[in-house]
Image (cartoon, rainbow over all chains, first blue to last red; front, side, top):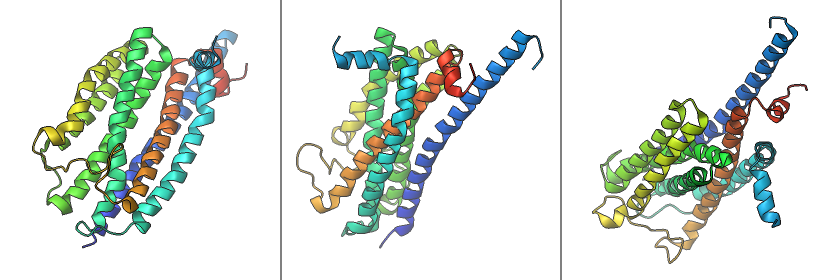
Length: 52
Length: 249
């Protein structure tokens, strides 16, 4: 027997987990950078006396 | 000062680490993809089917490297956590906590692929066998470290508490490693040995070693990427972090 469907299933799980591991930190990095930029903008607006 | 020690000291500074991680994480991932492509090609298209297991044995080319990584990453996480607890090195806290999701991922891959292999070979998706059960406990330990780190607001206190849990959990590693010899186990003993003769033919083992190397490269890329994010988030108020995020000075 080839058990091909089990082999495909196992490799699909492996690839899916790797894709998740690759994508999630990149999304977090983008979100962290966006938060830093937004915070800097809020601080700049507060210092200049204008509401953001 | 010794140039190597000086380099390590400089790397411990958050902005230096950010630059280092930004440069080397893509290299880790690229090397992983190249070696993985070679390993998977060998595993799926070059090595012959096993005379008893048919093609299902090809699952071991992802199952075994993932299982080894699940143990190695845990040991490394505990090592970083110990350094962080003893010498209060912030970067080691970051690295220890970045290890946890990667280790959990490899453990989950080990359990999932083992289960998928087990169905046609053992006739069941799961058995409360010592190796499987101890590996499941390892996954729970990883999740415990991740959960504890996320539950405490103060990042340094969170990393210390989670790091302590990681260090205590090291006791599980020899249990997993020797579970197949200490108890009667459905899981087979070691067929592939790093030191000593493997019981698997050399013509079938080379893709495995390539995959073992590929998972190491992947880990380097992923660790640097995750640690970079955490490092940046912790240092968000610093000038270098603002500059790195693109805030004009």
